[in-house]
Image (cartoon, rainbow, N blue to C red):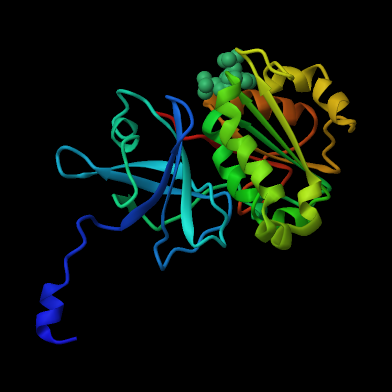
Length: 271
Ligand code: A2P
């Protein structure tokens, strides 16, 4: 380029700026959006990174968000709560296609296949926006290469809050590209949605449904077993703690990237 062209090129408005490509609102508390992917970004399905907007003081206002898209996707997807007085989400909920978003290209996280020992059955336990990392892992071929059965439980207050997860799973099964990519992996998915505050076909906290054995009876599978079962957990702090206790009672041990074991836990982004 000539000197003039170099000068004429507009400077990026934000550091690490990406462009919003799609926004979909589900309820007054939940929405999903997609952005362009930084060219240099490599991540493992299930990881999170920092994203955000410029705050009123001109400084970046960033929060940890699980990447809901799989590692092979050309765009990044996120699934978010909207909090009316939340420092970031009060603004983030108004983004539109074409807007800029800060995406720091430094992915980290424990909800990755590398942190689990091989097994037969993989459980994903999610509440609320804790579904996001599993939206990534459900679209990741490695999930089906490593496991014979993939059980995704999602507990929300009401039926409408299950929409993102339900549409994602239905979409996988209907999408030709996904059928080609995931093949008979798609038949391995067992989706187990539950609600706690609105009538639906399956009601109750998943913790309760594990304790009573109802989850296993409904799916026609044996109770949790450290020989065969692996789990990833993503929800509120209390939820994570309660599921962890149940998994440990069943003899599963918490793993990490450096020391893979039978389950891993990560807190969902809140506020
Ligand atoms: P509940 O309605 O009984 O609180 P939230 O919208 O507050 O993030 O919660 C999402 C879902 O997770 C709700 O259905 C909620 O049930 C459930 N939940 C919250 N805490 C726990 C917990 N400690 N164990 C199991 N489920 C939980």
